[in-house]
Image (tube, rainbow, N blue to C red; front, side, top):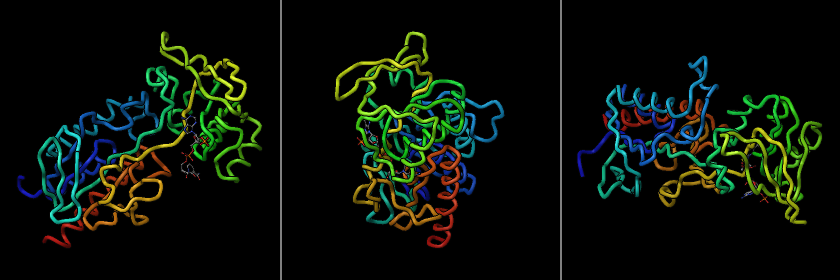
Length: 311
Ligand code: NAP
């Protein structure tokens, strides 16, 4: 165990790096656990056009490298390890990784969430090349093309409505014949002439990895077992997200949907001195820019907490 840190940040997406930039510039000498596969969900994206400051857009991985360099420039110390345990029951808090432990007066949790995937081989090969988990991010690239959404919850319907506003017909593939989405969202989708539903069906294959883009989706009707093929340029997987909160179960209050519970309008968790930023506590907006904004909030709140309790 080394000296007690003022701030430990867990994560390496836009929320975590922004928290690091702010904490480092406030002379809090942050220690950031960036994990064995740093960068968060933007590492799975190609062109990001909705992050302000990049007129022509920027690919996800170089954007995250830029975030990282900016955090390093102000002296953030980074450790390329996955955090294996935390103890928020005692102060100072303890964070363990790679067989070692560190103490901290405040912790910023920014471990993100992952989009659930169908588990098809070509899905990961074509991710960012026609397969997407975010219509707000990528819908624009498929403005005049054939798009399909998979799922039957509010996310799927919301993605379909968003895509329908952008242009052509949107097909929604759902594995049952009734939606899970809220009634109001269902009504909106059923009323929209651009949205068509394909019921009782599952995506069986996504082609064409050989040419590096999506051209066709093979569907199986789960009632008749019949196979069909649809020409598709963009396939949006909207079957839910899973926040990365397993580490914090029993340590922080979680919502029934497993996201970290924060006081509305703040990043304060159920444990004073522990703050949560980005997608780990946000199941509404889920944008890089909103994550970055909440990372800034978490750093400012950590700074104020330290001033109030340790000055
Ligand atoms: P969700 O409610 O869990 O819905 C996931 C959908 O994907 C379900 O229809 C499910 O099918 C389907 N699905 C799950 N795994 C699948 C698989 N392997 N293959 C094919 N289909 C699969 O998730 P969500 O839509 O992301 O919503 C999560 C929460 O956020 C909900 O509480 C929702 O109300 C809320 N939300 C609200 C809004 C809004 O109000 N504007 C927008 C987005 C999300 P089954 O129905 O057969 O299980």
